[in-house]
Image 1 (cartoon, helix red, strand yellow):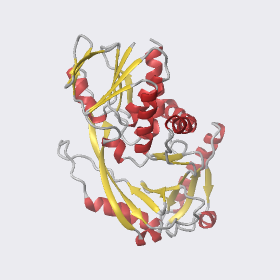
Image 2: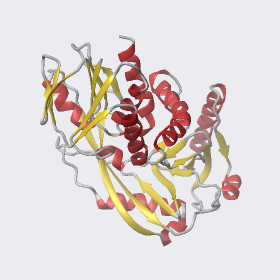
Image 3: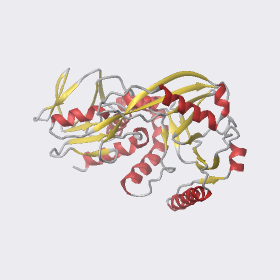
Length: 364
């Protein structure tokens, strides 16, 4: 059975690898550029699953599936490829900043207490730290506005590019064919993929092309409205570890992430910039990126001494008028699957998306 996957970001690569473990599938992946470009190359790889507010339904099931799969997937890929994938197992620390209204602050802590209880019943751990515990364990955090912190020891962070390249290498070892720098022109009514390298017939088509999914679906007379949201991030070089060098969780607060990436370097991001006036073009706002950097410095003042060694940006695919992501059969087609529109959770949900696509194909 021939399967064609369009798109080789983290989601497309994860699908290719997961399907490569199924006997009897002949898999080809197309992308107009090398792997891990576009939104994958811009991601910070912060896997906010247990610390997210999703507690039931599809949104939680996807997170739970991914969290569990990553624990086996990373060592599996490292063994297959003989490549190290940076995978931070020291958890995520979320800083809660104060409100002048004490009752609002109490309400927020109460909300986290309820979530902590729910997670405990689900077999996961969340800890609520007071400011004394926070100072003892993470002395680099010195913002006077912080009233408390939530520590999620089972959430993770990884390098999205290293992950995607490892998925590609592992899938190749399992027999998957990858065709990069090939433009996909469309899917014909006769179930063939038209590309700049000619036509290819397939039994299944998986559209995992992020923002490129909309024009492909439109050719099949099925409008999928996915719009870009720009994210900018930067890498700061401090030259030494913040706080305790042996305890380097991701620190997050006010939607700003401080991500340790080793050797005293930190990724900081990301902005959330929407298109204006119906345009799909978004010019990066340098002031917004500076405000993200300043928030990181407010949390960890030592970062004021760091040097910015690079900045980058990427477009995330956000479905309009419906929840992210879109994982389903294309309406009117029994063999065209959508795995797209993950918005800010493509890396987090890649394993669960691959699992869902595999189930759709093998259960048919």
